[in-house]
Image 1 (cartoon, helix red, strand yellow):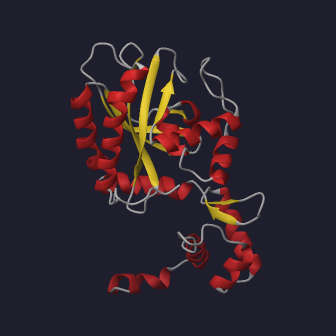
Image 2 (image 1 turned 180 degrees about the vertical axis):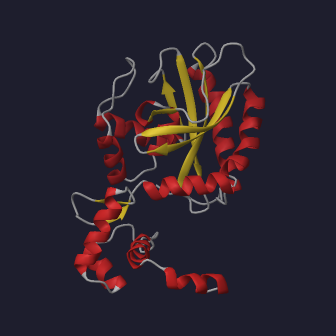
Length: 268
């Protein structure tokens, strides 16, 4: 502990310190933990651990699995991490990749992250074409009917996917929107196999989008890179033969900038 941290140690709030101990107990090996496990690991009474978990759960930092009754990290740490990545240079790392993608195909490109049952567009670079799909940083759309959302959901665990889908109904926005949970899960398996997702007029009639997952140094999918445009330019043939390879290459390039090794076998 450095000198400044040692000076401030006397001001520690014990309950906050213990709550942080709980959050830091979860890692890549321990994805879920029970109250008894946490109590033993942190040498705390089970009643104290339960109260701390209840507080963290209300704030979204912890969530409980309904089947096992164990606890795992919630969405809030991911949101805080996204803020950190933003200020650390996540968008700065993505900008040249997005700009290059636009130059390659002259279509609107974007970077997006999942937030609960929504996807947030954090970076958008417009095409020079007169006819374009309007978008802007900060825009929120449902995950179940967007390429950006599906490209990330395809790599979530079954329990996590259940939690996300239960949070908000899968609304029917167009005649092409997938609203059946089982069909949607089957669709996501296809997305994972292809390595990219397509929004085939599922959110808005006359608009198609394509997106691929972005991974960080830990191989976790943290975002997606995509393209959007009118169906007059986004034919399914063009998507398959031209746009999909470009989007997947851009996603790999940004992933490598975040420390991901492309030669590694992707995590499910």
